[in-house]
Amino acid sequence: MSDLRLNRRLLLTAGSGVLGVTVLNTLTGCTDGGASPPAGSAPSAVPPSAAPQSAAAPAASGNVTGDWRRVDLEYVSVYLLIRGKEVAVVDTGNPGSGASVEQGLAAAGLKWDAVKHVILTHQHQDHAGGLAEIVPRIPATLYAGTEDVSSINAGGKTLKPVKDGDEVFGLQIIGTPGHTLGHVSIFEPGTGVLVAGDALRNLNVLEGAAPLYTADQTQADASVKKLAGLDVRAILPGHGKPLTVGAREALQQLAARL
Image (tube, rainbow, N blue to C red; front, top):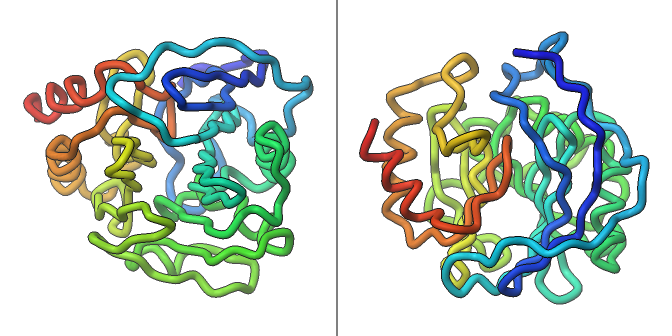
């Protein structure tokens, strides 16, 4: 992978009732479990150097009214799913990502005490490595897929295992094994918002899990087909830009190619 030295910029976007804090991200793939990003690929997360700016986002496809924020760490994204004054944080980035997540909360007018749930899509370091750092700051219940729980450092707190069909904070847990055996995605039926972790990537085009870092490609492909059966109206991937226009069509086209 090429060396990416992108200037980070934090945007506050709004479209069809959906809010997102975002810094454009163009890196492929996910590191292997417990590893740091490959040398020469991208830096670990560091706090943003500039205050948020506001800009308009493309209108979302369908009636997407949920409030979400994207905290882009250049290499990977963290998502804040906000319902009133409570937040579910999906993934935590690499170690050292806490300041960036805190700034994302601040952009929404919230603090750490608003975080009531942390859901990890999978065990890899760039998605779960920041958990131990933020655990002392949050009054949250922690969740991860059953098969991945034992591989995650939760900073001394207990991780609650979740599986396909479980519900957290009004969100559906969708079992999407393949990238890791315990990988899960998070779906909100009322808005059609899907937080896909590394089950999906959206760099130049919507793709499935990066084969180089995927434990079982057959399962990963089956998970994409499973997600394509949902009424998805916005896809929030671990790597790449959120897809808020034509998300369902793009996902169904991807599934048909597998």
